[in-house]
Length: 206
Picture 1 (spheres, one colour):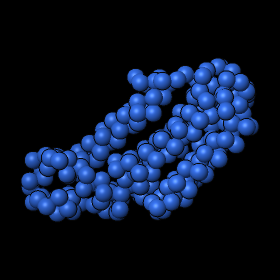
Picture 2: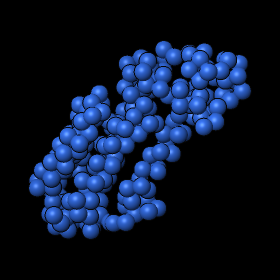
Picture 3: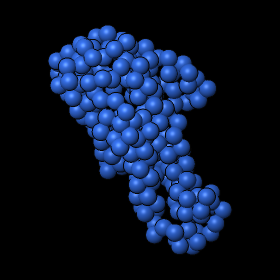
Picture 4: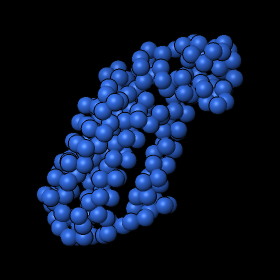
């Protein structure tokens, strides 16, 4: 790991523990084991470090879509017309574990949860990624599933809320329970199965 990567990693760890506002450049340098002037050789200031965290997070987001082979990704292995209940559970698990355990995504999410109460701009970013933006993304997916006649025609926004809200709840529930991941996955699978019972129409096989 390069010094620049170490700076980013330690900064994100500190941001996730204390919030962005409470961390100073000197704190980051100390955590890395370098002098503050040496840190400025790699990043202009704390904002520059934060911007790099956003870039890394965005890159990881793109990678997880490819890893899960979601429709629309470069590695898509199934379409909305052919998706099975088992595949939906795998996708839900993959996204859930990404936000819960990924070294970048989990810290980034926790940082925003702390900082949203102090910084309007970061609160907007949190809402764009994990509240309104997340629901809008799910809404588009369910609209596509309706068009493909996989699930029943209904209000896609309400369906998105009913699907995403339990996932968001499980993230909060298991955030501080790293040894209970299997229980979380079981709860998530049951949620997806119940959702399918309610909304599946045809093409969504058991």
